[in-house]
Image (cartoon, rainbow, N blue to C red; front, side):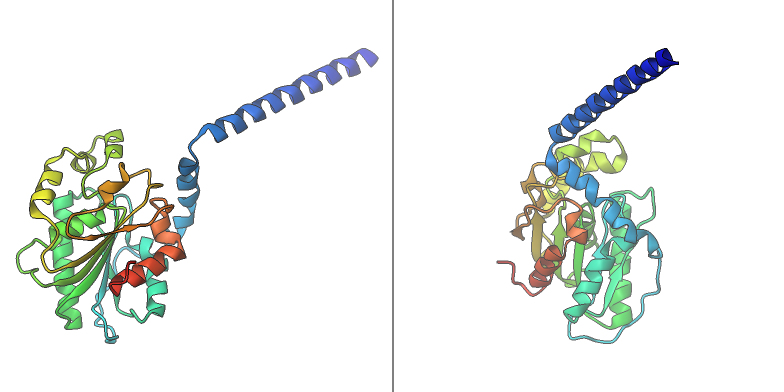
Length: 259
């Protein structure tokens, strides 16, 4: 019996040593990863609130609040629920009329732009407002710029705020090979088209960029000529949607106060 106890003791000691070694390797691997990567990954579960918002809602007139209606435009892989927290915060600033568009899966950026253009017109008609303010995240910023170039949209927007939008393309788009991600590469036809178009005329612009954003590389690609660049470092790509400090910056940008 003693021999078996010795054997079990040796097995237990060996297992413990193996576990300690494995744990140390995992820890070393974790610390070897860029902290921004772990921050990005940690923020993803915090967006779970987005799943509890319906994809569609009627465009109600809403009670006038002394401001243009707000329209939120989500990015690639996102949905209208991404802006739930920001919309609630801005409501405290008196922005009671807000509308969130949802794009159907499989749409191209150009198709999303057409859908957004119609959405803007529907909001203007429902509210009786001549202009709207737009807040766009990631790819949604490019969709918004294209939408405002559609016929009949002159003067339809007062302000366009983009957060982490790859206005000049992003090298991270090379990690996927879809029609949409190819359009987000720096050398794409879409980027050349946007550069030729410039910022929408008559629209006040603020472009948020962050040096900790791993999806927009380089960080300056999130800025655009004709719009004010707002340094949002150290936000991650998802911080824009969940960090109250970003909500404060957005509220200030809506009022033209970005410094």
